[in-house]
Amino acid sequence: MTSLLPGTTSATRGSTDRADARHRRPLVLIATLGGVAAASATLLVCLALGVVGWFLADAGAHGAPRDGLRVGALGWLLAHGSGIRVDGVLLTVVPLGLTVLCGWSIWRLGHRVGDSISGHGPDADRIADGERDWTVPIAGLAFTAGYLVVAIITFQMAATAETAPSQARVVLWSLVLCGTLGVTSIAVGSGRAAIWAAFLPPSVRAAGATALRILGTYLVVAALVFVAALVVDFGTAVNVMSRLHMGAGDATVYTALTTTVAPNAVLFSGSYLLGPGFAVGAHTLVSPTMVSIGALPMFPLLAALPDNGPTAAWTAYLMAVPLLVAAFAAVRSQRRNPTLRWDEGALRGTAGGVVAGVLLGFLASVSGGAVGPGRMREVGPLGFDVLVHAITAFGIGGLIGGLLMTWWQRRAARHAEL
Image (cartoon, rainbow, N blue to C red; front, side, top):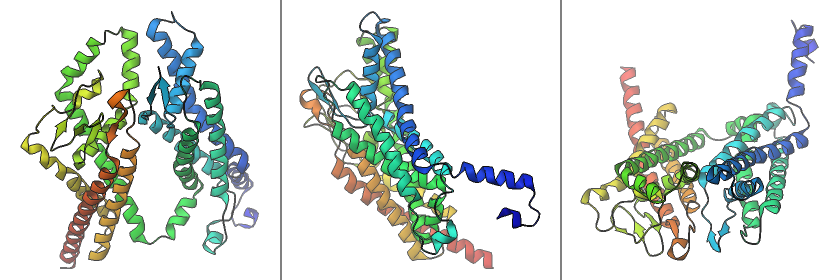
């Protein structure tokens, strides 16, 4: 067909044919291999860290490299919600740092898969005419199948009667990660996401952008608050490390393991700012209005916790932070997508805030779990309360931000007409 275009040379036709071939690779094969690669990439990182940790812990004096490999595989399974038993104690907390790494791998490989198969199926004009396009669903299923194969093989190789991870939870988390990040990245890489988004009303697209900006901005603020609290009492964290009497190798491994739960701590901080707070053991609560905690395990990140007992009067005002963050993020989002209609500005801000609240509530609900025996089986944010408070604070803040920016843009438009 390109030979009929005026000015088309043989070199141009050759480059076009090569580009078409690059975007029309075997769909099922490429998508399946992409899923396998996405799982294997992070699994290999965990296996390598397991072996390095085994060597640093005692210079290889005890055990064998396969023990380090098993620990690394179990860590990868933990990132997929498997839970494990250590000396008979159930641990169900998910190291979200590793989960984020897995999600990033899924996104990157999924995007490359989408680009490789973008030439399959109908083009944009045929999709606009109503022709069904199964490219992304088929690729998503194949990608997920490849990922699940690696997950199940890893489980079968690493699971033991003593550790007892849950295969059902691994499969469920793999399905959720691939069904959200994987399918979305394939749709973006193949260009389908842009085509489908064109059919959505502009207000819906703007509300989605507002939701992502509110959630992202709030997580950054929560991270800053957590870091500030840890820095204020950094001496306690250092004291905890010194009292553990670890050598340089053990301390390095322990620090690396601690960083894998840093995103969990950020979500704990976000739940604290919203008001409901979080628990660090059964019948405990850490919130801006009350701090009731008992004896704590020796874990350096716990140095960021406020002191037990009555809180200062000013901490109650921290609950205004989520509303202000949502308003600020809504203003920033609407600056890029201006509107002069009051109803549309209010809808964008409110809907974006509600969606961001739902997303934060989900993330908070998966950030906790059992971290030890006894009362330490209940650690984490109060999921439903966080959901309700997040929807309320972000929704109201988004509404305020949307209306304020609409007023400002209407004012600017009037001045421009003068």
